[in-house]
Amino acid sequence: MVLRAVRYLTTLLVMISLGAGASGCVVVHAHQREHLAKRAMTNDRDPGEARFAQHATGSREGADGGTGQPGGGCGCN
Image (cartoon, rainbow, N blue to C red; front, side):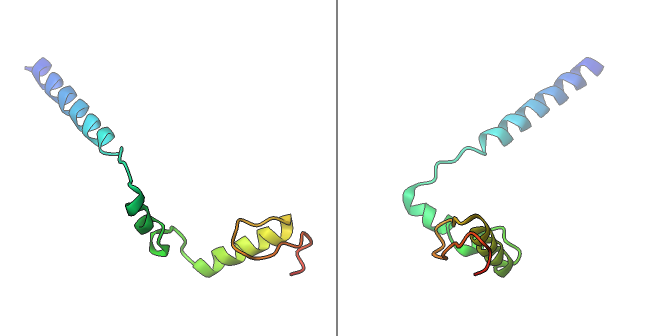
């Protein structure tokens, strides 16, 4: 009786694991990517703070991530 319960639980655990693992693989088509790139899909809690951090990093390092802000390298912008 105990062996049957252990087998049942093991089988159940394997099935749940396979189901959860298989559901994570998705193909995102080009026409669907526009929805994923929307601002509402970001994890930023405060967009203004993220923008300021990007500006500070760009000014400090003299390089920027394509946001259109010039980088001076000295932090005096």
